[in-house]
Each structure stands twice: as C-alpha cells, then as structure tokens.
Image (cartoon, rainbow, N blue to C red):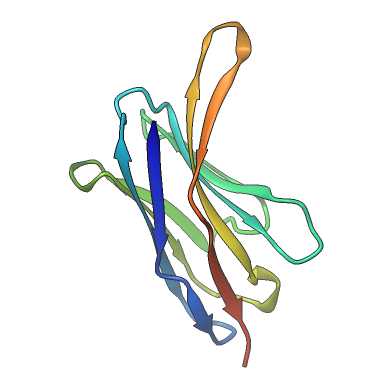
Length: 120
C-alpha cells in the first residue's frame, strides 16, 4: 500500500506561482512513476505531468514551460512548481503513484486531491 498526501494548494492571482507537495509513505520501493493530475469542474481528470525513476519527465502541452515536476527521494516527496498561473489552471490537483505489473496491468494510488484556484 502507498499513501499520498498533497499540500500547498490555495488561492492565487493570475500570473502568480504556487508549489504543491505530495508526501508518500508506505511501500515505496515498487513505485515506477509519480505524476500529477488535475480535474476542473465538469471535466474529466487528466494527466498533466509525470516523472519516472530515471528522472524522465512528461508534460501536457497546456502546462509545458510553466509547470515543473521534481522529487526529493530522501523526503519521499514529489513537487509541482506552477508559475504563470491562469484561471484555466483552476482545478483539484491529484498526486498519483503508479506500479507497473505484468501483462500490461498497473496499480494506481491517489492522494485526496487539493484545490488550486486562480482568480483575482
């Protein structure tokens, strides 16, 4: 089992910055990928960025150049640094840990989600 706890959300003005943290605990040695997803009102949850054990990162086009994912292995924490935030970034942000299994299956663990609101 893996437990994930997000922190750092809140209200920020357009153009501002915010850093989210995701503290992981439990059976961490099998985790293959950490990621951040977000879900805006009325929209499905979608992947915005991920980082693998070899530090490979992926970003969806809408956040590329503005968001940065990183991790501190010693603290078992993954971060999402967000800058140049816009109202369209308003969403509930979820931390995800993924373990790849055999035969193309996977196990996903989720945090509880944290609200980020970009508004004047």
